[in-house]
Image 1 (cartoon, one colour):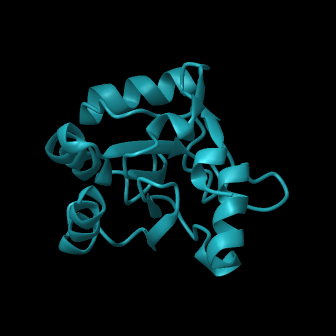
Image 2 (cartoon, helix red, strand yellow):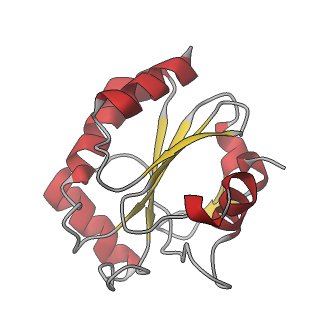
Length: 158
C-alpha cells in the first residue's frame, strides 16, 4: 500500500485521488486558520510557485484537531487562504488526523512510521515520493521554505 491508494475530497467537494499525482512528489500539510503557524501558508505558496513547475504538489489539509484552530467551513477556509495568503495550491475538505475518525491517509502514515509520526499540531508536513512512499515528515516548527524541506523536495524531484 502507498499514499497513492488514498483519496481526499477537494475543498469544493470533488474527489482527489492521490494516485493522480503519481510520478510527482507531494508535500501534505495539515493546516489551520487560527494557529501561530498559520503564516506558513506564505512559505507553502512560495514553495508551490518555485517547485510546482518542476512537479512538486503542495496539498493543504484543513484540520480542526488541535486547539479547535480551524472551525471554519470549507468555503470560508478557501476564501481566507486566497485573501490572506494568495494560496493557489490545492486544499482538501476538512479532515481529522487523529484517533478512530482519522482520515485513512493518516492511518497509513501511522502504519508506515508509527503512531509517533502522526501530527502533534497544525502544519505538520509529510513528503510523499513520486512512487507514493513516505519520504519524511517534519513537525510544525520546521518551516516549509527552510533548507531541510527544500533539500528533501529537491532530492525527490531528482
